[in-house]
Amino acid sequence: MAIDTSDRNRLSFRVEILSPATIEEMVGKIREASRAPGARDDVSRWRAAHGNELWHKRGHDFAVVGKTLMYLHDGPDGMLVPHSRYPDGTEKVYTDSAHAGEVYIPDDLDAEE
Image (cartoon, rainbow, N blue to C red; front, side):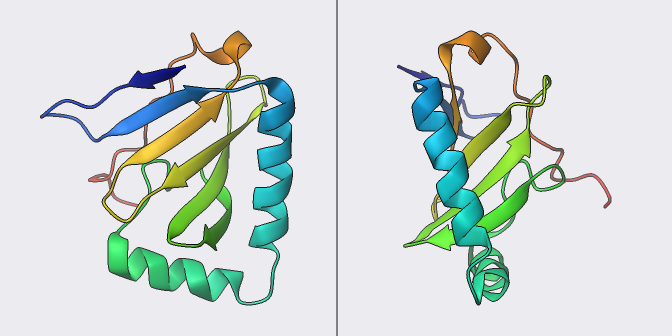
């Protein structure tokens, strides 16, 4: 199941509902990819070409997989939330059905770091 949050006045992201086991597997793969040699440089080049991800302040464990930036952020109850950010600026947030009702609010891209 997907929840599309895009409209003309907001940044575009979709929430994808997956099984807890699938979320856990994604988290493991993203963490592994983020620790690979050269991952940090790949992420820097990706951002230079495509801009910041929506959860850029809270994100961690960044990796570029193919043409996609993958990363995690900590959910309200400590659950790790996987993300995919695509070159066109769209983003997917992955969660399980138990957390689907939670509101995931992106970081303010205009706020000072």
